Length: 113
Length: 112
Image (tube, rainbow over all chains, first blue to last red; front, side, top):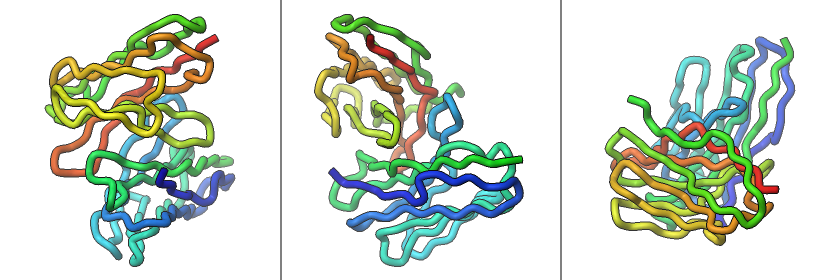
């Protein structure tokens, strides 16, 4: 089935550092969603992107919808301990319809205090 | 608003036993979903329901059945559990006219 590739798979950073991660697909998406999952919890929606080139912020988080419509990026500025978790990208492949999302494998973020 | 709720939170089954995972949402959403999450695999869709009275298979439906009991509730049943069904199961519902899905806290299932 459709795959989304997230990079990197894991990150180990110092508190206060900025973080960048990305998500790529072999097919076009018309929406990109970014979720965060805390340990033992369900994914929580952080940011939704609806238009190619769109740049959207949510506090220290900024996400971009790639111009090619095959990728998306998430940046976290000045990381803090509560940013620890797994970040997933997701979207509905354009040929698959609105009912289903495909998810990336996740980027696991670990922060050293 | 509780959002999406799931019960139980944890469950241990022996091979061959059956059980039903319960999910309810109070956001008046039409569409609901069941996913499983395994290490390194992301979230994979088991079944979904576009509206009350309809269900459709997702990517990994084998070994599962679902029931959309009413608009609020969508249950997932394992008729004869297998060790390969050890996973974390998430229920989600979708905002109307949007792709955004909201998730429950998950059920952690171990099959021995």
